Image (cartoon, rainbow, N blue to C red; front, side):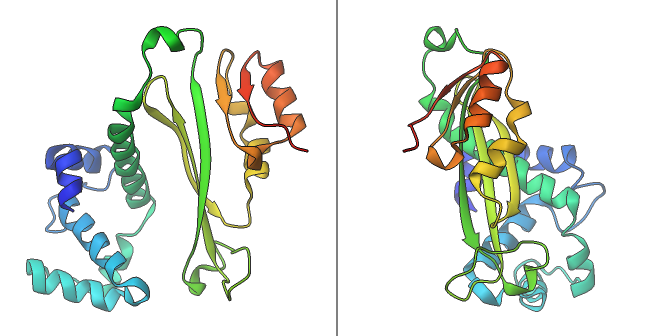
Length: 210
């Protein structure tokens, strides 16, 4: 939580909470308290039940809230808020790594995309199906695409772990614009997608798939 405060700042966190609809009225469960709760939940590993979380809020902040009310806070607005905070954090981290503008002036966007997968609690299998193996029944994949030219995120999507990178490339090919440079690893390699990028007068960098 301290690193979040240091990189982003409390006011920026509060502003994002309002912009995304997470904070719609005065509440003791502020944006900073919520993220402290999320860090606590991560530290609990598989024991991050609602009972543990409401107990933490009561002991640390004196906030009395029932499990049902806390459960209702995990909605689409909250997901949008967390994604916005993550996007801002990573953008701040990458902003110093940008190349000079003159080097990138030939391109509209310089799109770098990758994904990461991780296991999820088995009760999420209906929403996030895993790839199998090691007894895993649920899994989540995060697709993240970063524009090296502007330092902004172009995509940050949570999907089922069974949805692979090649499938993502096919389903998001329309997002590439004229003059873009697309940089991806072999997991996204697809001849039809590369043809689509070329047809849209964009460019790509990829190793050959043998």
